[in-house]
Amino acid sequence: MENLKTLSSSDKMTNEISALSLVESFLDEYYLFRRNVLSGKTEYFTLSKNEDEAEEAVEEEPETGGEEEESSDSTWKVLTPEAFNSIVRHAKRLGVGGKKSPRQDIEEFVRSEEVPEFDPIREYLENLPEWDGKNHVAELFGRIPGLTSEQLGWCATWLRSSVAHWLQMDMFHGNETTPVLIGKQGCGKSTFAYRLLPDHLRQYFLDHINFANKFDSEMALTHNLFVNIDEFANMGPSQQGKLKQMLSKVKVNGRPIFGKCQDDRPRYASFLATTNDEHPLCDPTGSRRFVCLHIPAGEYIDNGSPIIYDQLYAQVMYELCHKKTPYWFTNAEVDRIQKCNLPFFKVDDFESMLKSCFRVPEDNETGEWLICSDVFEVLHERFPMLISNLSTKIRIGQSLKLLGCKMKHTKKGQAYLLVRI
Image (tube, rainbow, N blue to C red; front, side, top):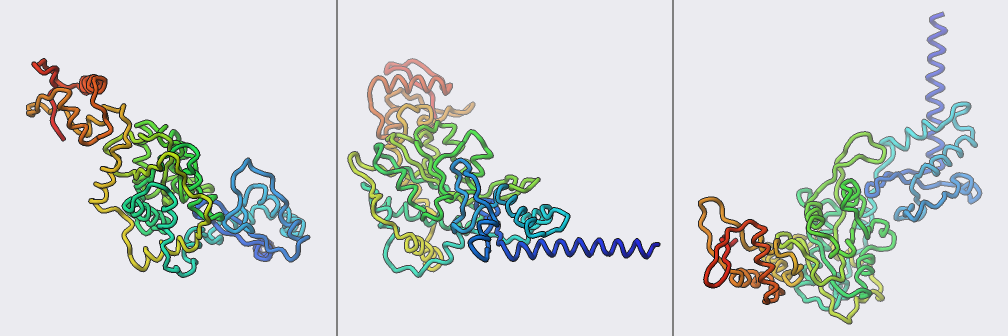
């Protein structure tokens, strides 16, 4: 009797192994799978023998409300629940699994380490043709009217940094710089941003981000290559503060699609922004992260000329991998960027401007008594867009009171006890 039980158990195990082998043989014959590390989704490719079989294998999937479903190669598709069910039905029609449904075995396979990882941006960048030696980066950013040669250099550094971080060349810093395109509505800002990626990679371009939702905003860092902040000026000081924090992130801690626990994911996204407001910056202390690019009134970005993407990115790869060109800004460049950003600060945020130039003295610390005109002169050196009039001086006085400054009356007017920074 014990021998019969042993044989029965052995037969059962053999049958299970046989069923598993049939499922794996079925999948190997009809499908390829890969795990897209950028989108976080599993993708599949149908290896059909003929057109009729292809139509039978995976039925046409319904539209999902505009979300891009295909990967860089249009023959690869995202493994949606509908597509997965179609694969299971295909297996059943061929008798795979016998009386037992093959669903569990198929699901175990597509969620296992048997599925190889696929990095679409690395695949693209590491298979580019040889660079032809022409300056395609300068040609690209030269389409933006009004830029100086210095600003063109900053844009080139930003693009190099973007590509370097796509390749995870710097595991200690994120790409903290954000070009801000400033110009009248209709001058081509958003279109220029969208065209930075070739067609097959534009599913990794995001033109909106929800800063109110921490999970959504952090997932935007790991699932996209470029994130464009449209109408950047609509971001208040608190949102610009959140953006500053995001720009410094190197990785994102979140739960994968099929995971049950938190997992560190690399950051891919670099940021740029567009706005119609000529004074979009709020926080003087964070201005080093923004490169403001002003498009003169009445002029337009050239979005009609074609972009030779393979050569554009081949140039960047050559500069990074062969010339070892820096993809970061020097301290001197950061100082210049901050100085060039001064005309683009909001002129109504006196509290932030004052805090960047003065502070209230600590206990037993000696300060100096300054009247509003003295304070204005200091502010005007850093923020030349400020206008000297009675309204400005009144608002300076009101802001100093809100900061809790000590005050006293003098012959020249109200004076405030401050320490210059």
